[in-house]
Length: 330
Image (cartoon, rainbow, N blue to C red; front, side, top):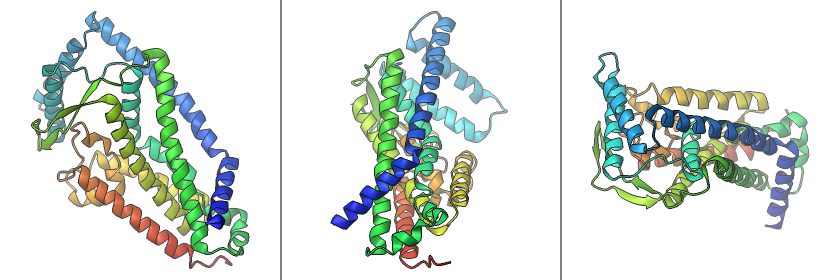
């Protein structure tokens, strides 16, 4: 175990010296204030439009706009199904007298992470993990690494532990920076605001029989747990590509194409049922918490978690199998 600890320590030092994690922090420090300002402007425009800060007026207007789009013959059937669900959920919040989007730091963090889990967070995770093995080939240090009196599986295990650690640190840093920065504008309250979970969808009909209210801090924990799991799957997929493809640029290019195609597919594959077994279509797990419509019928939280888990396990098996047997002389 002491040798594994030394290997992990060495990998962490290499990761820090690459300074990519610091670049990610700088990206977050640049983007989060922009989104905070945009959210503040939205709140100001809403207040100017209705002449009040009453969230119910804003909610009723959103429902009216959705119903207008629903009645339009030019609206596709898929969009109509989404609009019906959104209207029913919005009316439920109105009936329960709960504002689903009160401007505060906790709500901003929740919404930012929910919107970022589909593409932004996977991309920054890819930046960390996509070259952790392939870079050793690029610099020629792979031969020095493998000539040490340490089993190959331990070397890859140390890289895996490092990837998991920095993936967790990235997700945590995203949440902390969102809260700290947005709180300057919106305030740091909102931890005990109620959020409804357990909303079940059957086609375009919404079942509220199992709905219960939880404090927003508890909802945030569930959301970040799902985001961390999605990010971890992306990290393991990137690790596998780093083992299979010796070129760092090629590995990153493949992963970038896969993630972007996943975002496009999620909006276009409602009639292609077998696409629900692709990992990138299942990355957005947070939508299931509040009754979001899945991209393909038959998908739910249990299904998406299972699909992602299978992809993660397969990635680990392939990574260790190839790394322990690959020829590094050529």
